[in-house]
Image (tube, rainbow, N blue to C red):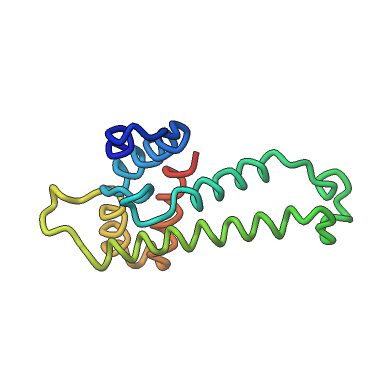
Length: 144
C-alpha cells in the first residue's frame, strides 16, 4: 500500500481495510500475517469463504420448515455448507501443519496455535484427535 501511495496510484481502501481486519486477529491468534500480499493465503479466497459462510448462515431452507424434504437438499444449501466447511478445514490444517513444522524456540515466542498444539500433545488420552482439537478451537476464535 505504501508503494501505491508513493506512486500516486489509486488505493482500494476496501481491500486494504479487509487485509487489516483479517491480519489483526490472525496475528494475535497465530502470531503471523496470513492474508494479503505478503501473507500465505489469498485474502480474496478467505474473504469469499467468509462471505459464503455468512450467506449460508442466513439462508432460509425449505428443509427447515418441511423436515421430510430436508434429505433432498432442494436449494443446495447443505452441499454448499459442506463445501465451505471443507475449505475452512483445509485452511486450518495448512496453518496447523505450518506451526508443527516450525515450532517456536522459546516459550515467549509461542502464539495461541502453538499453545493449543502443546495442550493437545500433553493430554493425549483426553484429546485423541489432536489436529481436530486445534482446528476447532482456532476456528471458533478466527471466524467472525
